Image (cartoon, rainbow, N blue to C red; front, side, top):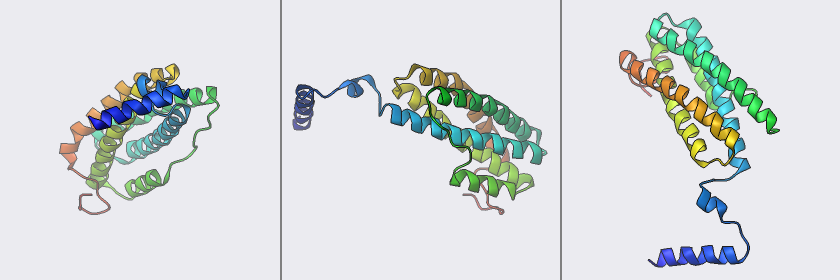
Amino acid sequence: MRTIVTWLLGIAAAAAAGCSLSPLFTGTRGGPEADQRFLESAAHEGLAEVQLGELAAGKTSDPRVKSLARAVRDDFKQTNAELHELAAAKGITLPAGLDGQEQRDYRDLARLCCSDFNRYYVNMMAEYHVNDVRRFRSELRHTADPELRRFAAANLRVLKDHREQAQTLVPYFGLGRTYGGDVAQ
């Protein structure tokens, strides 16, 4: 009870001082800076998805993995084009390359073959897409920018489809990524 009273007094004091309370009540979580972080993060992920999809489509012989890889690659090429248009309209420069973890993921995946390759890729896509869906849902809930809301909403279904497709394949190839051996990570 004391905490609620203190919180309410703090809000009243902030309002009396002329501070804006709209982020507290509209659901926004940081405004333009948070939206820019979302766009940059989506750009990194999109680049990784395309490059990993190209690698997997060319390297795997399993038709299920090849289908997932092609769908991810093709859909993210389109998403990345939309993302770059949106960022350019807002004056935001997006990263042109993979971040450190994505580079390690690509390098680790490129070293593998056969069942190890398929297991690593399928599990990676399941993991990536769980995070992507979470990030896009959060942006959809918290941004006040109508263009970002439209972008997040339009791409959320595709991300969910990729997640479901990858998660459906996990039992066929085994749980966990591998690093050149048979040790689950």
